[in-house]
Length: 355
Image (cartoon, rainbow, N blue to C red; front, side, top):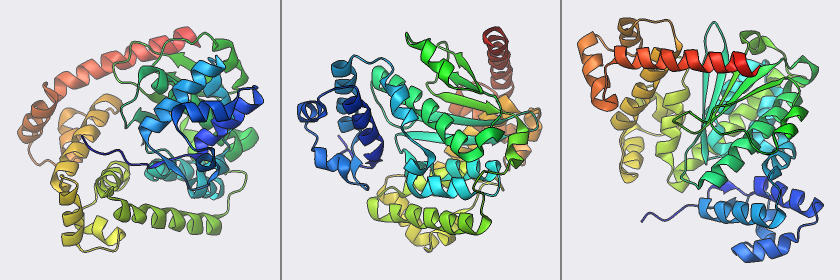
């Protein structure tokens, strides 16, 4: 069994501890019960393992009896709670640049989840998905906390310029559904029939050009460089594969090559390849994984034909694309596109019914 790495910022769970204290819960008894040192939560750069987080969250829910604990934890997190990424977002010249930066460096914010940024003519989407195994109760807690924390961050970013947006959660309506009425501008859709757990946030395209309240291009460049340097530090912690996958996934200008990624990290291609081998993977494997995910996104969320998707992904032959896609997905690109479009129509219908 692989040893778990303490790589998830403790600062978020320190906020949960503050919520518990305000509710009159004996926080120190809870921490003692799960074997967590109170001083650890007080350290700004402390990290926790996923099993420690699971134990703390489950104990907090049980002891407090608060079904809405996740919402109050999320509300307690302002955009500056997200360290360098939060400050970079605040100073971003446009909301679109801030969202793209969040997607690229989300592993610095919450490694237990991944985020994808998608933009087309109809809407912008942020898709949050779990990157670590956790219990259903712990997952539901994190989904609700992310929705609340993102709501607060968007308010910090855009202030009164924030427009209404849709949030789709892969969970049934909670008993505390009335608490969600506190989120102005948010249209909520609980989609318990989704097969994949996660959150989809959908915005109107014009939000891309909105100027954040504290926009400062010079400060943004400095903060973005700080994020890049922090990301480079993954070399020292044996998490290069995750960084490479994120860079491949979030690139908006074509999928970068191994050489381009090595240059970003100030490494030789041989050294980067060696790091990936140490993590029992390779650039080729990650490349094909990311290209398959992008293929599914284009088939499901664009008006491109299957042939156009194949060319967009760099295939020179439709048959090769179809063969590679069927091998990984178990169905042809055309079949996948048909099912995805059908599910999207159901989502839109649900949105109309619940709005």
